[in-house]
Length: 120
Image (tube, rainbow, N blue to C red; front, side, top):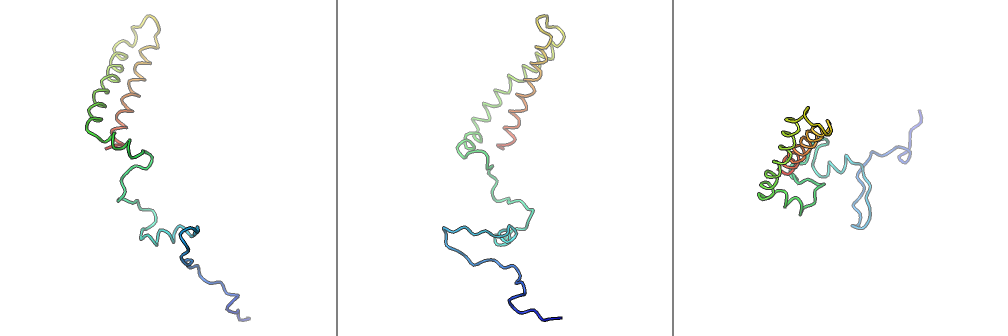
């Protein structure tokens, strides 16, 4: 077999040298994670703030006043659900009205509960 010269052999992948701040440095995601000291597939637990909710809205939603207001507003969907269930087969105008009340009551309860769970 013929010997390969040093230029013909492929060099193992290495991290390119650091560039100026304005230049884009495209590297492998595994190298980026290794530089940060993280293992792949783990969550960063140091940053618990939700990225899709803006910071001012997160401050408002996490306040005690917002918790009290959402708790008071929870009465309306509960009443919708109760009235719809109580008069399910008794509506003479339209038989679907109690079903609509049940569905909107459940959706209202779910939206308020999910808001509380996401913020807390």
